[in-house]
Amino acid sequence: MDDATLLEVLHATATAIADALGDLDDWGLAGTKVDQYRHDLAADAAALAVLDEAGFVGTLATNTEFEILRYLHLGDVVSARSTIESISEEKQTRLGPGRFVTWVTSYTDADGLEVGRQRFRILKFKPGGDPS
Image (cartoon, rainbow, N blue to C red; front, top):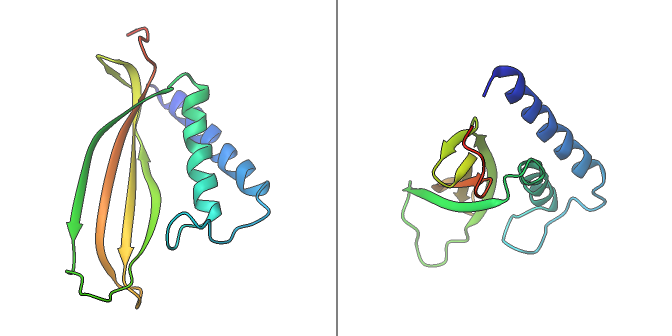
């Protein structure tokens, strides 16, 4: 992928996120997970929709990494916050052209101290895509 195409994808992603957040009336807790806010869900969905619209509709989980910074104790209250860390340049895979999307989830205790971290990576790809 050339620099101009990458900039187009990044611009489209930023625009989609800005539009999604601009349309959001309620930025409060989503109620799906502890510390999961509606604006986080809207931003993630908007970023992935850009890839879907570009034809990258297939999803394959590729790997996850988990780092324990402190062991939990009975009674600990843990919160999680996820962010999209990166979207790769387009890669050619045997499934078709695709992009790797990586999320990082940070787990914190009641004092706000990080107790763990997880990286989760998926491949968003064009099924049966043209390898050119």
